[in-house]
Image (cartoon, rainbow, N blue to C red):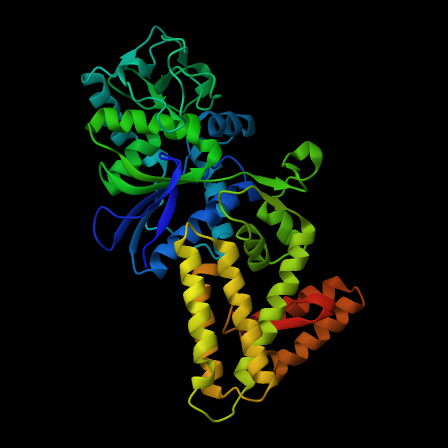
Length: 469
């Protein structure tokens, strides 16, 4: 079965053909580590995880590189405001980011290059652009890329260059699409940078945001690779500028497939602190929501459609996942003899539908529909008394395969009656404490359960679920 993706560069769905058979090089725009990542950021990271898992589902070996932007306008601004050295300031948010990835069960990339560890690579790339005449040093001593020297500039964002002003320069890392101008590759030091600076052939300074990704992708994926992803807001200027400087330096096509995810909305509006609808993963965890519930909501809409995130949707996710948990428990409880052939049609039909859906530009709605259909079929077979232990295991095996992409089902989580009696007793005591709103005691009992190697997860209607840590 062939994979197809919507290539932003072509504005259409096209077959996927990697540069090297069976291997995929993928660069994903990672966090700017000046604060905790919010759920809008994680919508993009979740889409990229779904893409990675889909590629692996179809047998590809993926080499994923996700950058950590630890020097830019925002990291410098906020570290100076906090009175903390840049490296110490960003270290806190790097650590938090990796904790959040684990919470959401996002598969780790092969490489997480930090910008501050790759300054020599950036200087070398800028030097090549200077030598080839694509870059110049301006009166402010900063180095800029001349977009007039690169006729293809604007091909990703589909910018009409005819009526654009030439010779205008922009030093900021981020700017609007109507501000088409020469952009900074190397920023000459000024007093606002404080002690953040590196020596270069053009004087003391620091890299621009866009050159960071070009240099680091080249370092780990080569001068040309398969897939570059990010949020739609990264398309311009960031991705457009990356293309210009990378292709100008090498003379080669840089990326074959560009995939972008749409914005995340919260309660139907753009997320903002002033509206009170701005959430980090830690905010949601503090409300009692689990990583897999948040994950379920964030993958629930096709990546190219806007996703409306609500707390009500999290409640629905909790109920849906509890339904799957009960189903898996039921399947494991079946011990009727048989060869499992009674489940063959249901499993093969669902497997084919799931595979076809995710191969079609990550059609998550149809993939989830295939999962629900198998759940209904499995319950129907069990209700009729015709499902054998072998058939139930076939069904569970299909869901394990589905979850290698979905990453939220926990098919093999241990049932409460499989946990040691002392763990179940503590869990029951904790349930009573929660009902009595004695949350201090509830927390203490949760910690006691953890010491015994189990995690207790709260379910709807004051129920709970135990699984091995």
